[in-house]
Image (cartoon, rainbow, N blue to C red; front, side):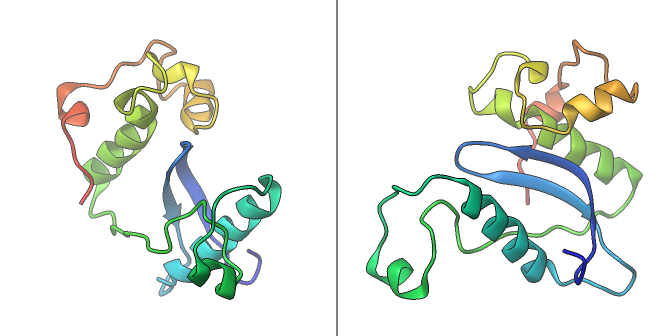
Amino acid sequence: IQRYPFTIDAVVVLPDHIHCIWTLPANDSDFSKRWYSIKSRFSAKIPKGERLSERRIKKGERGIWQWRFWEHVIRDAMDLERHIDYIHYNPVKYGHVINVIDWPYSSFHKYMRNGIYPPNWVANDNVKNYEME
């Protein structure tokens, strides 16, 4: 991570996927190296036991991550706010919790401690109906 620095501005980790918003250094858009670093560090901490395809076995890959990712460059302050809200609402959207505050693997708690969200924050309809591009 030191070789490819970035700041995680928002994150949520769910059982089957992860969403992040990063700030990268100027003139740097190498998402692949950063995703590789994140996924390999997570994978090293998770107990083994998932079923693996022949291809994954040959490549030494774990079966817990999609091998692709989708990036979106934030366009403006409104786009950033919408994506942060979407990320924090994701555990509710997928039925893991009823209230955003109840999901422990989210930067929502940091935002709440910093006074950006109230503890009882509820996403508005725009966030609830938003689909990532």
